Image 1 (cartoon, rainbow, N blue to C red):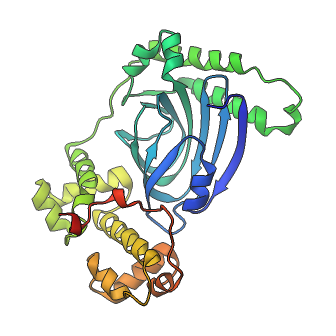
Image 2 (cartoon, rainbow, N blue to C red; image 1 turned 135 degrees about the vertical axis):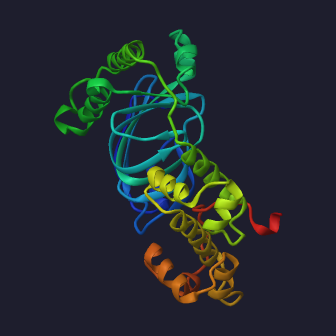
Image 3 (cartoon, rainbow, N blue to C red; image 1 turned 45 degrees about the vertical axis):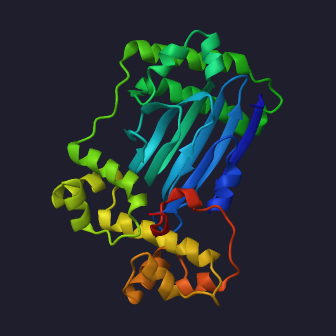
Length: 323
């Protein structure tokens, strides 16, 4: 990790600009859940040992977040105006969440998160690695916003050009962050997120959907396959994501249709052929849904020169041909 470096806020508005704005984080298998789903900004500050990350999002996006390897990351939820489900957490303002591995993230909110990433080797040096490992997949509350305020202060120093000639005490900032974290850990018990039985089933469903998107998935299919009442299914989807199950499934299928149309040659296939592959039989409704999500018609996407981006990587889904 390169130390003592500040990367100012960089706004993003699509997949490519989002990837360009990140540093040692990665974001894969991305699915916009609404038009302009990618909108947001990133900002980074490398201290002597600790990496501080700032993320702001205002769109609806479903994707996998890959944190820096051999780090323990602590997410501070500064703002969450809507629904956001991050791995095993339902995010709320003032949450502190601990994680160290890839996390599935569905955000349907205006959300601001600051993240403290600490190398495990540094925690081992401080004799804190075992303690912090015990907090993984658990959450606490940022009482009185002491931790988030310290991170905000660090970023603000570098945002303010008037302070550019003043030395920044990286070591003292790291010590303060660790001290506040330890104080919070002594004051409260880190706990796992509580989900209702219906929400647990829905989390299982969304992790399984990739194996079944080639099928005609509907509410009846889900209620029968997962032994869940339709009312509970609808309520649980709404409580976790603020979306209906039908909308979620349809949008996933639209994303994969969009991917194929972008990569296809118009002389070799048709919109109807690709749409039907992903379960769309009513072309009028399909075109309306598609334009609402991507801001263009399916035929416009197909007519362009094939794209080679990584927006939806092949490993993100199991297709019918693989069964």
